[in-house]
Amino acid sequence: MLTAENISPPKVKLGRAVRGFIRLRRNKEDTRQVFEIVNALAGGSSFRAYDRMLQSVEGGRQAYDRAELAPYFDDPDWLARFPAGTVGAAYREFRERRSLTADGLAQEAHKASDRVDDMHPVAWYARRVRDVHDVWHTLAGYGTDALGESCVLGFTFAQTRNPGIAAIAFGSAFEFSHRNPGPPYLRAVIEGWRLGRAASPLICEDYLALMAEPLASARKRLGLRTPRIYLSVPFDARETRIAQPRRLWNAN
Amino acid sequence: MNQIPDRSQFAIDDSLLTPPKLQPLRAIRAFAKLVEDKEDTRQVFEIIQALTGDSLRKNYYRMLRTAKGGAQAYSHIELAPYFDDESWLAQFGEGTVGAAYRAFRNERDLTVEGLAMEAAKVNDGVEAPHPIAWLARRLRDTHDLWHTLTGYGTDALGEASLLGFTYGQVPNGGVAFIAAGAAREFRKTGQPYPYARSIWEGYRHGKQAERLLDEDYLKLLGEPLESARRRLNLQRPTTYHSIPAEYRNRFGAAQAA
Image 1 (tube, rainbow over the protein chains, first blue to last red):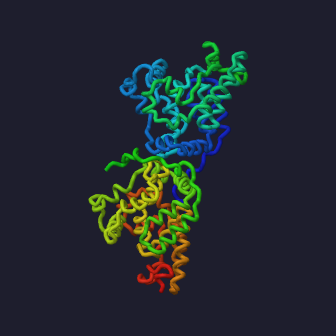
Image 2: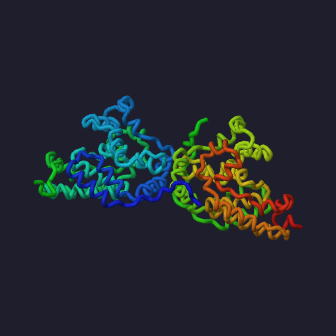
Image 3: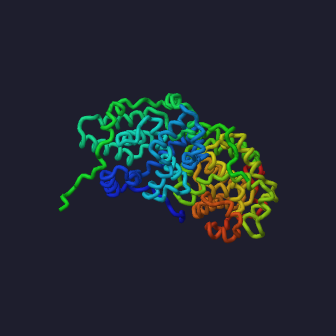
């Protein structure tokens, strides 16, 4: 007999996802909506992904140690120690160029749901996916332009199997193609998904050790290949004009 | 006390990653040895290891389905260093769970470490830095505390009834096998006492009670025993207590003669 608060597998909330999409289309920088969509469509995928993590030696070890990564990643002194050529150095530059912080992303995630801060193994897993997002940009070689984000999400979907992430990745790819027919947006995102499938499970990595590894050898070890289709899209076409709101109805 | 001891020297065994196959023959062999010498605790772990299948994993995810159990899994506290620290155990006042647990251990000269050594003879994968291994350790380390909470002694019937209780709490094929096998051995003694019913009572009480696994044990030890039993809905095992103490330890045909 269970009288403690039950945590039932979250239900899929389509309405909430659609609302998130509409807001994200208006403003691609509204990262909170990404978390709204992901949470609305996640269902039991985080539970299942955590379970997959426990089925590997390194994943089980990481889950047992359950390090919280954001405090490390946001510590400039800690980040400063990685010499040029390492994953840590590439990540540092990536963040500095765009003035990103793991905490900034965490704040957006928190706006969408405070469950992510729970003292719970599956919440820990969700935090981990969130905190390593920019490391995955660095490792996979995608920029933070609109297309780069979509491709990382295609990659992330392959790794986490969270349907909310797929919805954003492919939804935005269709949106780009709709606005700017020509560049292979959809193919670039599919490529991200395929590269994510081919790579080893990055979530199981020991990130504190990985940061000190040379970037090139880490990519090789993890089976990360160059995203050719993404790189073939010219710079200015990677940033589509999605930020400009398109009127859905006539305002008079 | 260090809550997260270094476990890096322990390898993560395959049985933690993919559910191990059931080995009924191994279980039957081990049970025969257990009937010969009921103090041979190692055989208990043999049987559980042989029949556990996917049960640890399932029980772990059951734990994650409550906020309370999830918080315990997240804290992944290791209990053995606390329970085996005499000065730590000494802090609990009369009438608390901790005091009853201390008395129970002292009377019988039990340690968590002793049980851990027996378990390690069968499979030292249980010490691995892995959440499923952590759950296995938690079950092992709290076994004697469950004796205290439920009121079962360490005589053969008390152990068998507690395994019934354990099965009600944490379904596991190995535990069920030992409890059912014990009921059969008790019947062979030919004594007119309701042994099997006592084991079944343990199972029913285990099902009725709150999930002990989800408890914050360090806090629980400071709670008055009687109020803890009420809160956790632990019933008094009346069938067990109805059997005279000197008949609770008869086990198997050999001892019946």
